Image 1: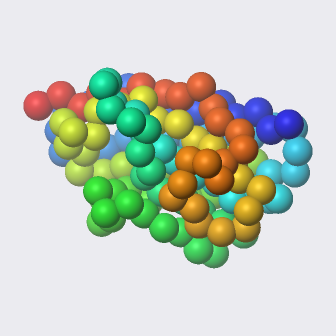
Image 2 (image 1 turned 120 degrees about the horizontal axis):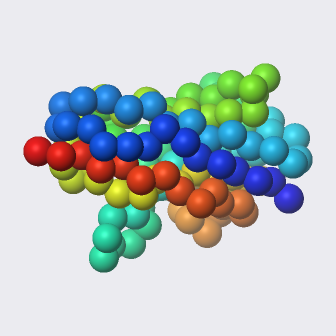
Image 3 (image 1 turned 45 degrees about the horizontal axis):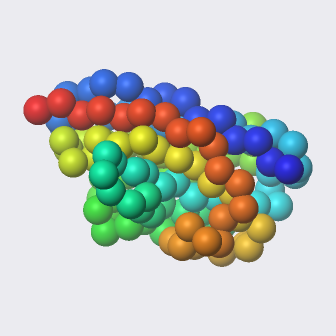
Length: 124
């Protein structure tokens, strides 16, 4: 079992920045690739970014490219999502997830463990 706890969400004005964190516990953190997803009200949960086990490879959704950066610190068992130039349409609950596959994955079905989510609200 892997437990994931997200933090860092909040209310920010459009154009602002937030850094989300996801702390993992349980199994060996570096055995898992990680991902960030988000879900806005009335919409499906969508992929945001992913990172492989070592942190050497990242993959970001088109909506996140150039504005968001995913990273990880295996010594701290934590992944991050730095979000800059936030837009109103970025408003959602953001979830981190862990996968046993060593790859950058954009499919929800490839992830085995999920956190409870953190709310990000961007005001105009």
